Length: 160
Image 1 (tube, helix red, strand yellow):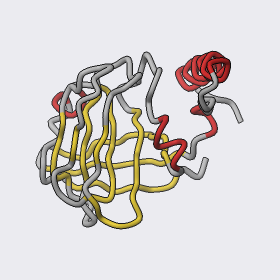
Image 2 (tube, one colour):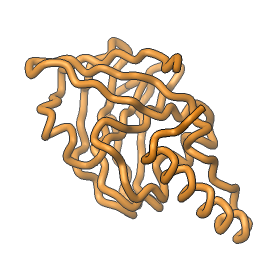
Image 3 (cartoon, one colour):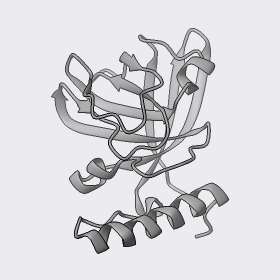
């Protein structure tokens, strides 16, 4: 399967960083090209927005997230899912770009947005209430697309 140029660049970068990380004795990073994909829609007062996202579906993938990624396309992101609603917390360790974190409840409603998070910060960013998903987008993307608390999210597996 042919990867798009951004995915190919990100995958190569992740592979190079995985090699360096492995040499230090840490767990190696996984190529983002191996992560499952999903299509995601956010619907609200300002229309429907579409995203193509990686799915962090295992504990190692969730720990990796978007660490070491240096570019993220406007329509791309990373989705973290929980089996049961819980307070979910994130941080920006080893994350080189600002992110918007959208916290989504079991009904698919955005309940909190942490906009323009600070790269490399160890501060905890929390949902403050039980959620089942966190969507990470390029920093500022939620504001540009007028995505708001209360908007609804629908996820479809990528079948391509």
